[in-house]
Length: 91
Image (cartoon, rainbow, N blue to C red):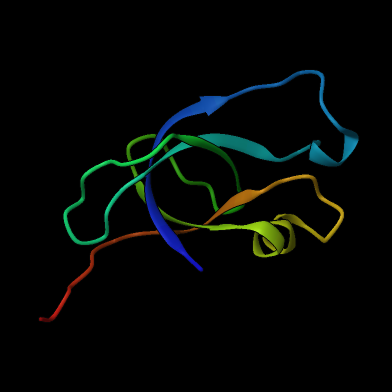
């Protein structure tokens, strides 16, 4: 399931699992799709699309995150897979 978040920072790790080499890591704050309000705890996500701090993004968890990051053996649990340009909710 895709979720919406806001990139609130970068994270660097010079010593890390070899399979993480080359992956950009970002800190994502989950936000409500309907209100835009932050909720929950920020998380670390691999960024496979080049998002920047301050952007609203789509992110995925689990096997979808590993697939997006390069394969089933990549040790990530979240990945940024899209940048939100706009959205509309029809009620």
